[in-house]
Length: 227
Image (cartoon, rainbow, N blue to C red; front, side, top):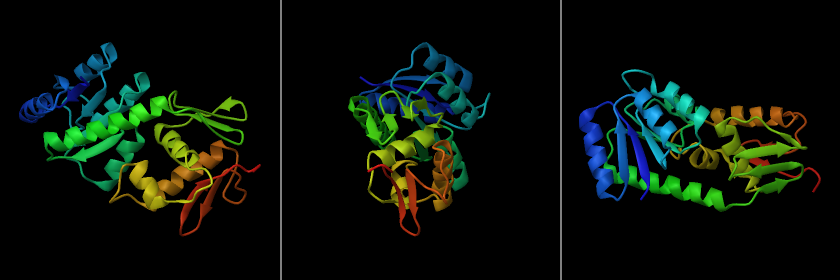
Protein backbone atom coordinates (compact mmCIF):
# COMPACT_ATOMS: atom_id res chain seq x y z
CA UNK A 1 0.00 0.00 0.00
CA UNK A 2 1.76 3.20 -1.15
CA UNK A 3 2.05 5.90 1.51
CA UNK A 4 1.11 9.44 0.41
CA UNK A 5 2.03 12.52 2.44
CA UNK A 6 -0.50 15.26 1.69
CA UNK A 7 0.61 18.80 2.61
CA UNK A 8 -2.43 21.04 2.13
CA UNK A 9 -3.72 23.86 4.34
CA UNK A 10 -7.32 23.93 3.06
CA UNK A 11 -9.20 21.51 5.33
CA UNK A 12 -12.00 20.91 2.80
CA UNK A 13 -9.60 20.02 -0.01
CA UNK A 14 -7.35 18.03 2.33
CA UNK A 15 -10.22 15.92 3.65
CA UNK A 16 -11.68 15.32 0.18
CA UNK A 17 -8.33 14.25 -1.31
CA UNK A 18 -7.51 12.07 1.69
CA UNK A 19 -10.86 10.27 1.44
CA UNK A 20 -10.53 9.85 -2.33
CA UNK A 21 -6.99 8.48 -2.14
CA UNK A 22 -7.87 6.10 0.69
CA UNK A 23 -10.67 4.77 -1.53
CA UNK A 24 -8.04 4.22 -4.25
CA UNK A 25 -5.97 2.07 -1.90
CA UNK A 26 -3.39 4.49 -0.51
CA UNK A 27 -2.34 5.05 3.07
CA UNK A 28 -2.58 8.82 3.53
CA UNK A 29 -1.12 11.05 6.21
CA UNK A 30 -1.69 14.77 6.03
CA UNK A 31 -0.30 18.05 7.32
CA UNK A 32 -1.93 21.49 7.29
CA UNK A 33 1.34 23.43 7.15
CA UNK A 34 4.77 23.11 5.59
CA UNK A 35 6.95 22.47 8.62
CA UNK A 36 4.72 19.68 9.95
CA UNK A 37 4.82 18.12 6.47
CA UNK A 38 8.61 18.39 6.34
CA UNK A 39 8.91 16.74 9.76
CA UNK A 40 6.64 13.90 8.65
CA UNK A 41 8.69 13.22 5.51
CA UNK A 42 11.96 13.48 7.43
CA UNK A 43 10.78 11.02 10.11
CA UNK A 44 9.23 8.54 7.67
CA UNK A 45 9.52 9.37 3.94
CA UNK A 46 6.67 7.26 2.58
CA UNK A 47 6.35 6.88 -1.19
CA UNK A 48 5.18 10.22 -2.59
CA UNK A 49 4.44 13.77 -1.42
CA UNK A 50 1.51 15.86 -2.69
CA UNK A 51 2.40 19.48 -1.96
CA UNK A 52 0.34 22.66 -2.10
CA UNK A 53 2.31 25.86 -2.73
CA UNK A 54 0.06 28.26 -0.82
CA UNK A 55 0.90 27.20 2.74
CA UNK A 56 0.34 29.38 5.83
CA UNK A 57 3.86 29.15 7.31
CA UNK A 58 6.21 28.87 4.33
CA UNK A 59 6.06 29.19 0.55
CA UNK A 60 5.59 25.78 -1.00
CA UNK A 61 8.48 26.19 -3.41
CA UNK A 62 10.84 27.00 -0.55
CA UNK A 63 9.56 23.91 1.26
CA UNK A 64 10.19 21.90 -1.90
CA UNK A 65 13.84 22.96 -1.86
CA UNK A 66 14.06 21.96 1.80
CA UNK A 67 12.56 18.57 0.99
CA UNK A 68 15.05 18.10 -1.82
CA UNK A 69 17.90 18.82 0.59
CA UNK A 70 16.98 15.82 2.74
CA UNK A 71 15.11 13.42 0.45
CA UNK A 72 14.72 12.31 -3.15
CA UNK A 73 11.10 11.26 -2.59
CA UNK A 74 8.82 11.93 -5.58
CA UNK A 75 6.85 15.18 -5.20
CA UNK A 76 3.68 16.20 -7.01
CA UNK A 77 2.86 19.88 -6.63
CA UNK A 78 -0.91 20.45 -6.45
CA UNK A 79 -1.82 24.12 -6.53
CA UNK A 80 -4.09 26.80 -7.97
CA UNK A 81 -1.09 28.62 -9.47
CA UNK A 82 -1.32 28.06 -13.22
CA UNK A 83 1.20 30.58 -14.56
CA UNK A 84 3.59 28.89 -17.01
CA UNK A 85 6.69 30.53 -15.53
CA UNK A 86 5.60 29.38 -12.06
CA UNK A 87 5.16 25.81 -13.31
CA UNK A 88 8.60 25.72 -14.95
CA UNK A 89 10.33 27.23 -11.90
CA UNK A 90 8.63 24.74 -9.60
CA UNK A 91 9.63 21.78 -11.75
CA UNK A 92 13.16 23.14 -11.91
CA UNK A 93 13.15 23.44 -8.11
CA UNK A 94 12.66 19.68 -7.86
CA UNK A 95 9.00 18.79 -8.37
CA UNK A 96 8.35 15.62 -10.37
CA UNK A 97 4.87 16.61 -11.54
CA UNK A 98 2.52 19.59 -11.35
CA UNK A 99 -1.28 19.54 -11.26
CA UNK A 100 -3.47 22.65 -11.22
CA UNK A 101 -6.57 22.93 -9.02
CA UNK A 102 -9.34 22.04 -9.30
CA UNK A 103 -8.67 18.34 -9.90
CA UNK A 104 -10.19 15.07 -8.74
CA UNK A 105 -8.77 12.32 -6.57
CA UNK A 106 -9.00 10.07 -9.65
CA UNK A 107 -6.71 12.39 -11.63
CA UNK A 108 -4.29 12.60 -8.72
CA UNK A 109 -4.34 8.81 -8.41
CA UNK A 110 -3.43 8.47 -12.10
CA UNK A 111 -0.51 10.87 -11.70
CA UNK A 112 0.74 9.09 -8.58
CA UNK A 113 0.60 5.72 -10.32
CA UNK A 114 2.47 7.06 -13.34
CA UNK A 115 5.12 8.65 -11.13
CA UNK A 116 5.63 5.50 -9.06
CA UNK A 117 5.95 3.46 -12.27
CA UNK A 118 8.75 5.75 -13.43
CA UNK A 119 10.47 5.47 -10.05
CA UNK A 120 10.23 1.67 -10.13
CA UNK A 121 11.59 1.55 -13.69
CA UNK A 122 14.52 3.73 -12.64
CA UNK A 123 15.32 1.47 -9.69
CA UNK A 124 15.65 -1.51 -11.98
CA UNK A 125 17.67 0.24 -14.66
CA UNK A 126 21.39 -0.25 -15.06
CA UNK A 127 23.83 2.59 -15.54
CA UNK A 128 24.01 4.16 -19.00
CA UNK A 129 27.47 4.75 -20.46
CA UNK A 130 28.08 7.15 -23.35
CA UNK A 131 31.79 7.65 -23.98
CA UNK A 132 33.35 8.95 -20.75
CA UNK A 133 29.91 9.77 -19.33
CA UNK A 134 28.12 7.40 -16.93
CA UNK A 135 24.57 8.02 -15.70
CA UNK A 136 23.07 5.92 -12.91
CA UNK A 137 19.30 6.47 -12.64
CA UNK A 138 18.98 4.38 -9.48
CA UNK A 139 21.53 6.46 -7.56
CA UNK A 140 20.76 9.63 -9.54
CA UNK A 141 24.45 10.23 -10.14
CA UNK A 142 26.42 11.16 -13.25
CA UNK A 143 30.17 10.96 -13.67
CA UNK A 144 32.27 12.40 -16.46
CA UNK A 145 35.90 11.44 -17.05
CA UNK A 146 36.03 9.96 -13.56
CA UNK A 147 34.58 12.93 -11.67
CA UNK A 148 31.08 13.35 -10.36
CA UNK A 149 28.99 16.02 -12.04
CA UNK A 150 27.11 18.42 -9.79
CA UNK A 151 23.72 18.57 -11.46
CA UNK A 152 20.39 20.02 -10.45
CA UNK A 153 17.44 17.63 -10.46
CA UNK A 154 16.21 18.80 -13.85
CA UNK A 155 19.73 18.82 -15.33
CA UNK A 156 20.08 15.18 -14.30
CA UNK A 157 16.65 14.30 -15.68
CA UNK A 158 17.49 15.96 -18.99
CA UNK A 159 20.89 14.27 -19.23
CA UNK A 160 19.42 10.87 -18.41
CA UNK A 161 16.63 11.34 -20.95
CA UNK A 162 19.13 12.16 -23.70
CA UNK A 163 21.55 9.41 -22.67
CA UNK A 164 18.81 6.78 -22.74
CA UNK A 165 18.28 7.79 -26.38
CA UNK A 166 21.94 8.39 -27.25
CA UNK A 167 22.45 9.07 -30.94
CA UNK A 168 18.76 9.86 -31.48
CA UNK A 169 17.54 13.38 -32.12
CA UNK A 170 14.67 14.24 -29.78
CA UNK A 171 12.54 17.34 -30.27
CA UNK A 172 12.23 20.07 -27.67
CA UNK A 173 8.51 19.33 -27.48
CA UNK A 174 9.34 15.74 -26.52
CA UNK A 175 11.82 16.96 -23.91
CA UNK A 176 9.29 19.37 -22.39
CA UNK A 177 6.68 16.61 -22.27
CA UNK A 178 8.89 13.88 -20.80
CA UNK A 179 11.37 15.80 -18.62
CA UNK A 180 9.30 18.79 -17.52
CA UNK A 181 5.93 16.99 -17.78
CA UNK A 182 4.60 19.89 -19.89
CA UNK A 183 3.03 18.23 -22.94
CA UNK A 184 0.95 21.31 -23.83
CA UNK A 185 3.04 24.18 -22.49
CA UNK A 186 6.52 25.42 -21.78
CA UNK A 187 8.93 27.21 -24.04
CA UNK A 188 11.90 26.06 -26.05
CA UNK A 189 13.94 28.59 -24.09
CA UNK A 190 13.62 26.42 -20.98
CA UNK A 191 15.23 23.51 -22.82
CA UNK A 192 17.88 25.73 -24.43
CA UNK A 193 19.01 27.10 -21.07
CA UNK A 194 19.34 23.65 -19.50
CA UNK A 195 21.20 22.30 -22.53
CA UNK A 196 23.60 25.22 -22.19
CA UNK A 197 24.14 24.44 -18.50
CA UNK A 198 24.80 20.78 -19.32
CA UNK A 199 27.33 21.72 -21.97
CA UNK A 200 29.15 23.98 -19.53
CA UNK A 201 29.41 21.18 -16.97
CA UNK A 202 30.72 18.84 -19.66
CA UNK A 203 33.38 21.38 -20.61
CA UNK A 204 32.00 22.20 -24.04
CA UNK A 205 30.19 25.02 -25.79
CA UNK A 206 27.72 25.61 -28.60
CA UNK A 207 30.58 26.49 -30.95
CA UNK A 208 32.55 23.38 -29.99
CA UNK A 209 30.05 20.64 -29.07
CA UNK A 210 31.19 17.12 -28.21
CA UNK A 211 28.45 15.24 -26.37
CA UNK A 212 25.46 17.59 -26.52
CA UNK A 213 24.49 18.57 -30.04
CA UNK A 214 21.59 20.81 -31.00
CA UNK A 215 20.03 20.50 -34.44
CA UNK A 216 18.56 23.90 -35.15
CA UNK A 217 14.82 23.82 -35.67
CA UNK A 218 14.64 20.12 -34.80
CA UNK A 219 15.93 19.20 -31.36
CA UNK A 220 18.95 17.83 -29.54
CA UNK A 221 20.90 14.62 -29.13
CA UNK A 222 23.60 13.15 -26.92
CA UNK A 223 26.40 11.37 -28.77
CA UNK A 224 29.62 9.53 -28.03
CA UNK A 225 32.30 11.75 -29.62
CA UNK A 226 34.61 8.75 -29.92
CA UNK A 227 32.11 6.59 -31.80
